[in-house]
Length: 359
Ligand code: KG4
Ligand code: ZN
Image 1 (cartoon, rainbow, N blue to C red):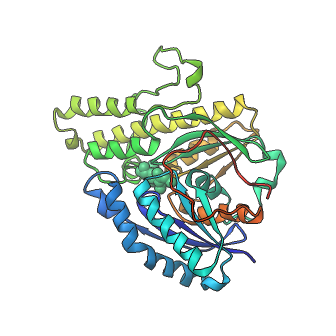
Image 2 (cartoon, rainbow, N blue to C red):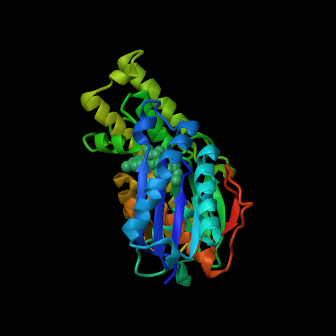
Image 3 (cartoon, rainbow, N blue to C red):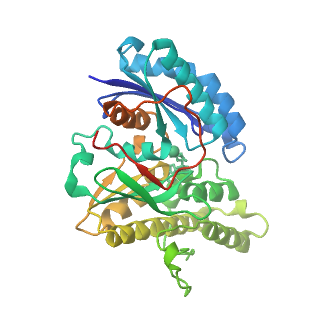
């Protein structure tokens, strides 16, 4: 048995998890800072760092206790070192380094974005990475920080074939909720309210889809843009409520949010399906915080071309967690790929990378 402890502090969740053999989640402790950031309507990096510092020791103890394991039985220490908010990342990174040094364990730096992809494989009976017939695979990674389409080959070589030119899909939800004074994070609030609304009532723009008579530039075929739909929402609310968009309420609010969510889901799914066709993919995966959204999950599963297999990350591994970090680290551990104390934090993802599936 190989046990890996993982640390995640790239944004506003302090998370520590213990994973057995890369897939069995022995513990998944998370301290959310949502309440602290809610008053600002978004994450404040310095505040996030301070909160991580306060919580990390307690969350670590909780993860070890829940897993029923002590540090002597741990084989390696994994930590998210990017991309993310650098002040926040540094707290987890330095803590993990201290842990690795104190207990004499190898250190493994993990890319948070790849971690989200790995979330699809946690707690699964079968290792879909090992199934050659599922490749090439197209992954839609949708969170508060990312909206990307990734093409993954069966040797683990991966490249980002599309990304957002402005806001991430999660930001489109968060900023909309902030605008309408509905709270933070916006995704879950909007999803709940949208359940009462009519998604067909208002036509919000589907940017970079070639709709509205505007030809789509070929280089934007798999790119996204959510700033237009956000601005359209502001004008729509102002048209109804004048200078106080936050006064939008009742049926009008529900129909607005259902239509807004529908526009975002529509763009995400149609681009993912188009990319899958274009790259002759055999399977499609969906992950990241926005993948918690039921409307997106349903459209993704129901609308995908029938010859494609779809895999969705379990909801509890969609939003930020350390289970996906420790899980992915197992692949590096098997390949004998470790980092040293010079491991540093970074803010952005590379466009090409390799996922160590075959280790
Ligand atoms: O993956 P995550 O926890 O953090 C990042 O890596 O960014 O994703 C957080 C994002 C937030 O923008 C949040 O509004 C969104 O995921 N989100 C949702 C839902 N739950 C979380 N968006 C839509 N519907 C949801 N149910
Ligand atoms: Zn994330």
